[in-house]
Length: 133
Image (tube, rainbow, N blue to C red; front, side, top):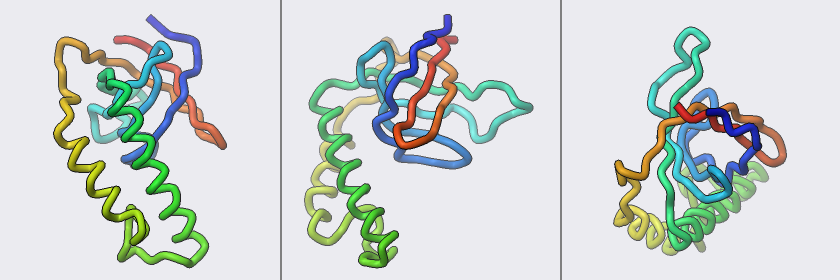
């Protein structure tokens, strides 16, 4: 069943030849997505696990993403180095606090996990069209 509506991709926390993990919308609600294979095999669609997340988790993921975006902008402008990778010194404590909270969250609720393939469109705003398997 293909959902032909492009959904927002809010974060890309793992990238290797495309989005591998992060937070996206599925049917208008926030979900964690995680790629289920290492490579694109023979042009076949890549499967992802989609797991719904609650509003607090979504808010924390977005806050952590904003911290990373500030670091990335500073790095690209030469104002930060790889030694502070993922967060600027002024954001480091909050970044670590958010990571501790997120580690305690349960993403792997098997009963509410879906498997889907996604067609990502990258640009100023990344989107994805999910196809349920």
